[in-house]
Length: 268
Image (cartoon, rainbow, N blue to C red; front, top):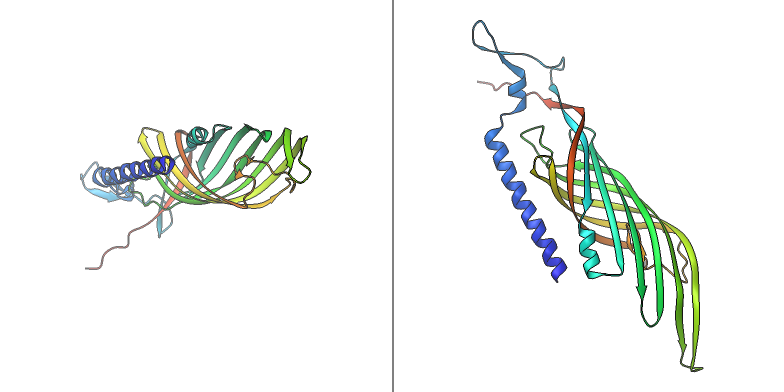
């Protein structure tokens, strides 16, 4: 219940911030096409139109593009509820065109669990790569806020073992002590993503995302499956729902060409 409440609160706050940001932009920003396509004549002091491209249907301008690097802080919340897990996840995305972004994520997992029945240890890495589509209609092309949907391909490599476990046989009234050796496994899955990123300070972003992860294949032994598959979640499930919450910083690096449809003249 506490985890659900924290996620709900974070989502509500981000939605409020995004709404406020959109209201401010609509008040203080003129349409870019007007500001670029019109220039004041120095002799007559009248506005004259300066086409930016040869296209009759659209204007072409450039905006800053760059790399947004972030940390998934929700993994520390998972640690609070599942102390035997340690997860670190780094995220990055870069703008390709007006609405499309390339996205990549890399992370590490270490799991160490022990009780009266067995001792378990594992560690592994994972990476996901994919694209995000920005659905947000923006008044300012320099704005980097996003409401997005996307798809990812995920790959993980994990090494796990059970140094000691105990089997109880009630029929023979016996106890068997044994171990499971170190085993290497790989996993492949697909993620469907929906989320939000909001600029709360200059170049500083907060964001959340929800994901449905669908396992494609994994090489884990059917006799002894890992407790956690890095980046995916439970080793016993074929699909996994997840929520992420990230903090990130945007680094301008290059320029992106944007096409804006010209407004058709109104008929009198």
